[in-house]
Image (tube, rainbow, N blue to C red; front, side, top):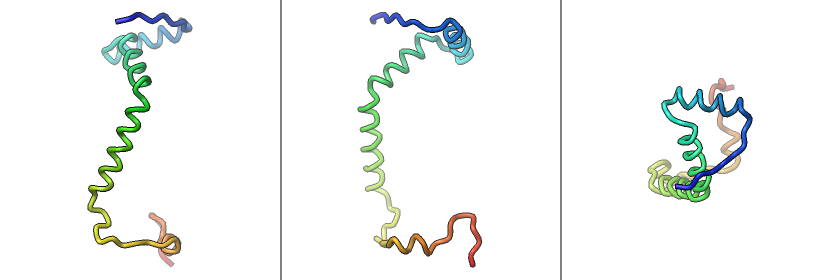
Length: 84
């Protein structure tokens, strides 16, 4: 494993150490977690998008194939409003 040196304000480091202790971890572990997520961000977003599309295709919502027009949107009441 490689080491990384960064320069931060002492108060940020102190506050980060306190929070890490409260969470039962270390600043190094939190930075490692953040940088791993940051480095893999694009692939995770793409995987999440693909999972969403797959779930939408597998969904039984609107299984009868009903279509709505743009005008239909204006004929509906908004949630929480009272009808005429």
